[in-house]
Image 1 (spheres, rainbow, N blue to C red):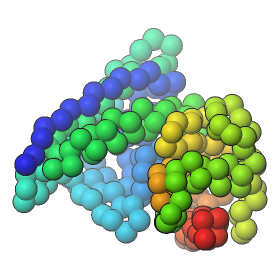
Image 2: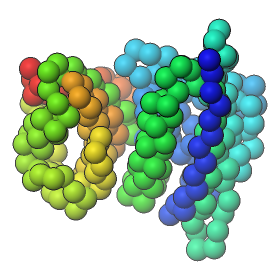
Image 3: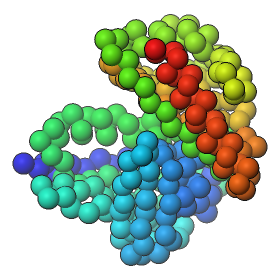
Length: 255
């Protein structure tokens, strides 16, 4: 049985409508703050694609008004489920922009857990968008994803392991300094800019690093703005190497 839902949020962003549009309506822009690797065919009727950890999800672009409105909708599954996204942009005085996001659709039998996860996740994603626009304007990131199971470990135990590896005090709170030296990667040296019960995010001079943890599993969604973002073959290869190094770091931490 399906259940309808709708989540609506509004946020003020320190960027022009054109900059916000680039962030929400282009593949490299979405890569710089949201999840996975993204591609977007810039037209109504085009396709928006997100790939995360080998999982590919496609949606049809149902509205495309540059600088104003973008909307997408996934296909309806056999049991009736689908998701739709709408982004509405409005410029304000002083060079800022208000972005309104509407996420709606139909969820399945586990709709309550799914809805709660979506409701908790969107404020974090919009925070990351703000961090991107405020601290990395005009740049795009290479997205890095890693995941590792931690069977038998509780959420507090996993958070403690992550905090220890990044020299963070517990509880992890915004403003704390993080430092780590993952093998094969530059040192991570930055500030916690988001922390809740499920995740924390660290901003450094060249990246946004998110560590999402539940009971028995850790996911990492990083956005790296260093030399590997040049867009050439060497840059792409460096991104692949960074993802592999972070996967090794996470697997070793939880092994």
